[in-house]
Length: 303
Image (cartoon, rainbow, N blue to C red; front, side, top):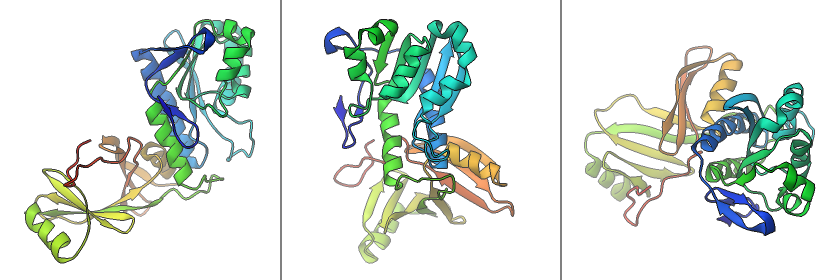
């Protein structure tokens, strides 16, 4: 388990015990519901808010969901947890002590206090946040520890949450709903009959640096983008555009008057979706929420 430059922890799931000890835990249900919270976080990222998502579960059923709205609502208190708690306040008044809250980043002190006062007895979070998170409050305040008697569990899909935080930082921390949806041209994709001949032509003769290669394709760096060549019969070129979240971008595209043609569907680095503008022009949008490709010394993809 390690902290990134922003102090966000990633690693295997763990549960804090008395005295600051850590117990590592795994729970398939926790991962299932955390993926729902990650979907909310991706929506927040797509509209320009901090990518933190949250769901509240009662007896294996999601009763509320929400995400961060700090920038779109211009309020520092519009955290994912507090907005989700408010959306089901009456339900929690009756059933809070039998609910679990899942949030993609460790709750801050404000949110942890609200969770405890809502009578929720178990907290599950993804990436830890040593700088702003409520762990110290949990460890030092007996009332909080006693209230969360069913667990304070962290690290569930923490790496995926951390990647969303990095995407937010790299996008320049957009501060309004009008933040540009399309971030950059990710790649131009072509088909070629012979990959070795293409490698010789583009790298050795034209000087393009190799970015990566597999048994069925290869890519060259072109500025911040890539020229991707797949083995196959030549077809019309495909241009892929990078977005913060393919799922969130598809939703925003449709709400703006466009349409969703295909997807979202999984790809190696994240998700992809094909959309169309009001005039029928198709665009391929993708995100890198699973992380970029890893290569060996020869450029072959290894993970």
